[in-house]
Amino acid sequence: MNSAITSWWDTNWSGDRSEALVFGRTGKLIRVRGFGRYRKPSVGIGRSGKSRRANFELRMRAEGAGRKSAFRETGRAVVFRTNMSSKTLKIAALAGDGIGPEVMREAIKVLRAVEKKFALTINITEAPVGWAGIDAAGKALPDATLKLCKESDCILFGSVGLPDRDPTIPKEERPERAALLRLRKEFSLFANLRPVKLPKELSHACPLAKERQGTGIDILVVRELTGGMYFGQPKKTEQISAGASKATILRAIDTMVYTTPEIERIAHVAFKTARLRRKKVTSIDKANVLENGVLWRDVVTTVAKEYPDVQLEHMFVDNGAMQLVLKPTQFDVMLCENMFGDILSDEAAALGGSLGMLPSASLGSAGSTGQFGFYEPAGGTAPDIAGKNLANPIAQILSTALMLRYTFNLNDAALAIENAVGKVISDGLRTGDIFSASETNARKVGTTEMGDAIAAAI
Ligand SMILES: NC(=O)c1ccc[n+]([C@@H]2O[C@H](COP(=O)([O-])OP(=O)(O)OC[C@H]3O[C@@H](n4cnc5c(N)ncnc54)[C@H](O)[C@@H]3O)[C@@H](O)[C@H]2O)c1
Image 1 (cartoon, rainbow, N blue to C red):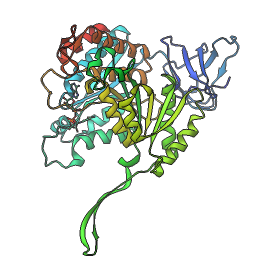
Image 2: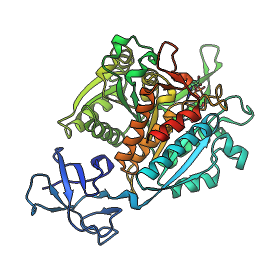
Image 3: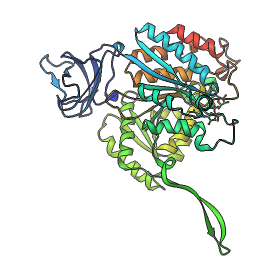
Image 4: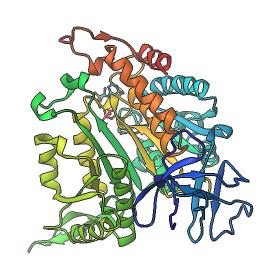
């Protein structure tokens, strides 16, 4: 047996502390049961049997194989998590501005219900960020808030930015750049996952005609987050002289840059995630025009060979934008570079009924202490409805489900949240953004009541 558990992507705990689905090096999905010694049972990382925790030893048995077919992990780093409930989950909760504090309050309420039900120990520390950070400590990302994030397992984020506040503050110091982009960079969050799921009860909230919604829209946009046009250098606006008169004009330059490793790592994320879904990846590029597109397509095609069970198709971004509204049900995982993903994930978000329904996860590389992640709703601070108990807290609540799944490998707890949200939706509870008077069983509720109902359904 020559298999490796290399990160959370490779594990899918069933709730039994010693059972997992792992992807073997051949790409085959194998169910294994741990039966050896776990001298350090919470999180272990080892390489060639000489881990930093020298006593860590992992023995497993493939399903259906004899008891003696144990293998020991060697040669590759392994991240192995068991029995997370014995560990304190350390969460930095940064609510931010606008509706952030309102929806965060409901998410924490739901997390407390999950903590009770699954006998977890969840340590949530709240800290200011965005304009709240500027008001509290003069900076959109106060030093104490950053320190807290570094000491935590993950960040549960609300949203930041209030366009009408103090225009004299330069854009580099405003929350969107000084807090949000800074955090993405600080934690090397290269993969953004945005699940868009339209529950059948909310088909009225989708802008597409019912026949285009098929049996339901369920798309995961996997967006590269740290490369491409948004970060490539040179990036500047300069004065140049042009034309016969040599008149001075302005020229703006942005640069699109991708390297092979950057494309490879995001492609692996897409394929591994697709394996947990309907096993199809649509890779988006502009290979007919851009050098970046040609490289993107080549690298993704090469990576796909490691995932023979996942179907790969390539699509130009302009066609992708069109297909999303013509036939969204054809998509499972959409793999996009940074800018294309930014645009298409918002387009896909519109299909989910409301921004208030859409969670997201931003992940970096799995480190020795596990998978650091940044979890936030897809929408912003919604200043138009802030402070009025009108915001839909579901995006923030579903973000906590992603957090439990990806950072803590607590799939059962994540499912409990997703099922609770499904239950209150099918019970007819609606915040204003998803309410339609044409629904006979629907009842309009505020932010707090929606949070209470979901917490009660856990
Ligand atoms: N990650 C972030 O922190 C983030 C993301 C996007 C925008 N922003 C910032 O938010 C501010 C406002 O931006 P915007 O108005 O363009 O986008 P927005 O997402 O805040 O609002 C767009 C529309 O969606 C609605 N909406 C959003 N979330 C909702 C929810 N949970 N429930 C019900 N309705 C919801 C709003 O009421 C509004 O009508 C800006 O400063 C922007 O920079 C921050």
